[in-house]
Image (cartoon, rainbow over all chains, first blue to last red):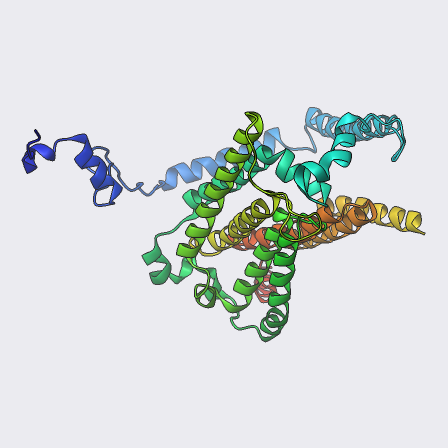
Length: 320
Length: 95
């Protein structure tokens, strides 16, 4: 039997405080931690004068190169040693390079069983014609998952450092440095008008054909991100927000990462435990082939594109 | 033919890498760095890894330099020419 708690009793519990914090009604720090704005630093005139005098004394007596023999000697020694050090490093590196085996030699140490297996069995295991992508996204899917997480964490860190309150962006135009430069540049806008759709198309092509032709999620995503950046630079944030705002960004980014995680988990679980992998490989050479490679390519691509756009927007005006 | 082209491009890389560190103007060094990436992407194609070339062209020549430009602008390291001229005039007057 459960009994409804009284409001005053409920307010003392952890759950109440947690949900209040979660809904953003109360800052956890207010009331518990004292937060004061930093006091402005004032300097007396005497201390300034004293500091200037000391600096002058230092420059005249200690760091005077004309009369201080030791200092001159040290200066000379410093330069000589830096040059010698530089040349020594260059010599060591060139000496090492001369011992490297020739490119394309049969008996090179990189011609071992690993690359042989990738080349001979790659298309049967992963169904990708482009072995590089198959290697990165199927054999080493866990690696790439880590990289995608790194991208996610990197944007989170940049957000912590550079994010400005949304009201402030609208109020304070100084945080948006587009206010200071010539807007509506005709040349840039015309070029962006022609180039942006081509860049987007090429990026999407590279992502979708990542398992058939050179490229893959990362390169295609970087290209789409570059296209978005060009569009923002030419037309401003207001026009971009019509199709790519913070909400879209959040949905795309989190969905891509979660689905990627699910697919990789499933793939590894079925692979490691001898279960049947139910993702079909398809016919090699067709777009709908390659098993997990195509969806993972799409997820990585959207993740990278979002990351690059977020970096640009955060650097530019402190918000998405 | 490809061999000569390869050597020319590699020489260009060395020249770029050295001149990035020796250029006094930060804007110039970013532009040189950009051209370094562009040449590097051509070399990737010659080394028969086109996927790396695509990534290098998009990330190295495009996005990294744009981020560098924004950062330089945020810390006021890029000054417009007009402002520089004004400062020069002020210095002349002061002298």
